[in-house]
Amino acid sequence: QYGLEKPQGYNVSFHYNAHVEYHHFGSSHPMKPWRLTLTKQLVLAYGLEYTMDCYEPRPANFNELAVFHDREYLSFLSQVTPQNAKPDDPAYLAFGFGGESNDCPVFDGLWNYVSIYSGASINAANNLNNKQSDIAINWSGGLHHAKKNLASGFCYINDIVLAIQLLLTNNPRVLYIDIDVHHGDGVEAAFESTDRVFTLSYHKYGIDRNGYPFFPGTGNITEMGPADPTNRGKGHSLNIPIDDGIDDEQYKWLFKTVTSAVIEKYNPTAIVLQSGADSLGGDRLGRFNLNIKAHGFCVETVKSYGRPLLLIGGGGYTPRNVARTWCHETAVCVGAELHNELPTHIPYIQAFEGAENGGGILYPDLHNTKRHDNLNNQDNLHKLVTQALENLRYLEG
Ligand code: TV7
Ligand code: ZN
Image (cartoon, rainbow, N blue to C red; front, top):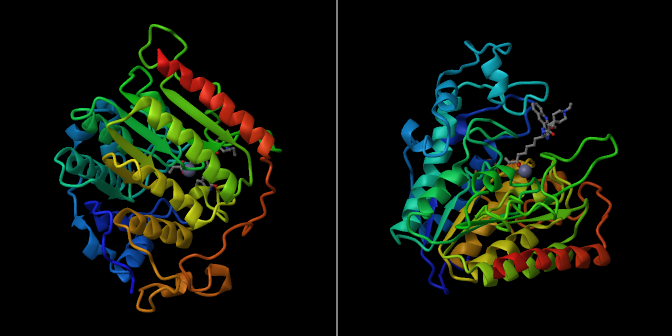
């Protein structure tokens, strides 16, 4: 009934340590690890665990994280607790904790939390390296803003960078694609000096009425990696700045046109897709108007190239829709079609029921669930694509 056969015959692995669910950033903080509980419940309710190899990865250790992050930063991160934190300690602010916005709070079990999501991305990358799977999934990862010595935008450890570093031991060229509504600045910065990683990010970019840039404020089309012509990384970043309210057809066209051009020109031997779900319509922090299947179209498109694929989570601040999307995308990976009627035996089914929660179905209409006027028109988008393809000419050498 749920179409559990795997017609395309991809080996899919699912990397998930449920201990990640027990962590809380604080009651008012938009990042809710609870969305991962909901995702897991949907994946299990549809029986998708029988179509994949499921792993429960151990947490990453200090040395594994130190492959990218500074040891001083990691020492601080591993020792700080809500009890011993000194918000006036210069190190505290310098490492990105607390501050006015409190994007990166110190909470109980912080080190445990970061080790768990990072361990899952590391485990997933190793599985691709060993050819144990064609597609490896970690919905708990995708924390693309973290820098080597700085927590930023809800991200403390950059699990994506750690995973790409592992993939680079087996691959001459890795393509990183990011469809979170926020610019994937941490991953871009980490690989700015190499031509062995190409970063492609689609995100909201612009200044709001209140004068604040949309976080993190970078990622214009003109930002293509270092300007210095002697830097090997020059031209190996492509940013696609998008305005509020983009709809399904526009986004799908933009994604397919630009992504296929990058894949054909760069010819990556592995692909990492950060599938942040805050680009959906109705997201608490996002600005776009996408439906679940348009978001999933990006996964389908990337999968169709048949390269080893690491699929990771990221943002997503309306938990029930994050769960729906990542369940759908898990199904896309294994080649299953899911029934729109949610199975009734799901724990926490109430989270999906009632008109305001999506009416007990998997694919509610999310277009305009939160009003964002569409500020993108065909003319702007065509110009954007022209400029993006122009930027790619650098790859021709
Ligand atoms: C990958 N937006 C992460 C996205 C990170 C976005 C931001 C919040 C926020 C934080 C809270 C909170 C919030 C309702 C939303 C620049 C400022 C903003 C001046 C007052 N509620 C990902 C990070 C972003 C924390 N940060 O890409 C605790 O929203 O915009 C900012 C920073 C700082 C200065 N102020 C404006 O999706 C996972 N934070 C509630 C409690
Ligand atoms: Zn985001």
